[in-house]
Image (cartoon, rainbow, N blue to C red):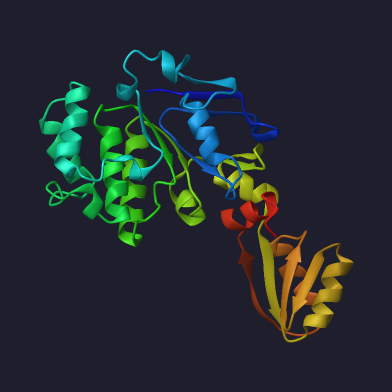
Length: 294
């Protein structure tokens, strides 16, 4: 089991600061989602964590930078670009070459093709694979050394809904068995389903960190939704109790009061209460607020 510690990582391109003093920890046995708009610095940060790009700060895998690991492929498996596989190589031949380089057993190849749901694609050249299939093959490549850590840049890119669901189940199982996952993604709903923690970056800076629930509660808390035959009167009564109320037809969206409090006010207000419930905040709404996308 391996923990990733990202400490004050920065990366500059000339006068442009692509990653600005980012620090966070990815505990072992967890999936951490790295979220941010296009151009926010996600890919640059992952490359810096793996020591591919120069820069300031450190990223440590159980206390050691990637470049100092004795056998890095047995500790960290990375997918940064699914197009990195030679287009003329057949899938099985590609995996065999990687396995030979890592001194992994040959049986590992067919095990991995089955694991990523490509058992019948072993004889297909990489150029003939769909983007989603190449993405699966890239994940298989990252797993050849049986690493305890996966670092994935947009791993759902090109996957169909079945593939996205498969990847989510696989990553959840990998983490539950003690592995560590750091993945960037723009599919917020999938991150919300699989990730234990989320790190949000915008303009190269870390702007939010925590569990999905913590981030949603802090930025997009739940709202009480009420419908009444006399929405105007109910709105006035709720405002008098200190609530912040917005109205859309006969529907009121109430902030600052709990459901039970709204129900109590409605009992004494004119009109009949037609519906009462909550609209829970989502990671997507919190993300859009944090990242300044709206």
